[in-house]
Length: 87
Image 1: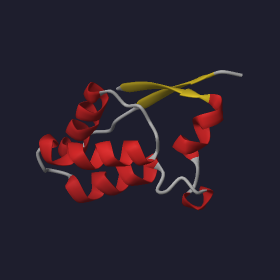
Image 2: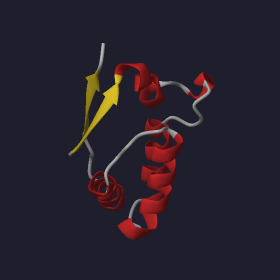
Image 3: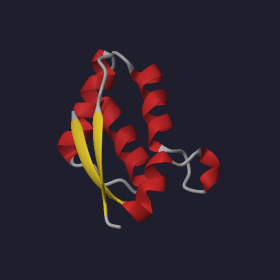
Image 4: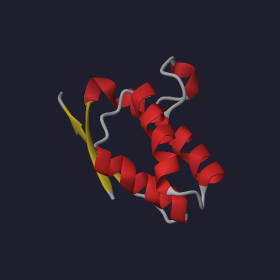
């Protein structure tokens, strides 16, 4: 399970739909990778996850991305806990 902290003013980068101007939302990118990369080794999935996280301006740690890649590879569910900070 991964954990990230997102400032309230940047929460829309995580949750926004594709029309919001932030590019492809991370949730959608993760779902697409889960569908297309299941069974592939995690090291092949990591660059695509990193790119998607960078486009969404999300600061995932290397360990978070590795856990996500392993979940995609094995097909097991991945839970991400998001803490909203700020006012």
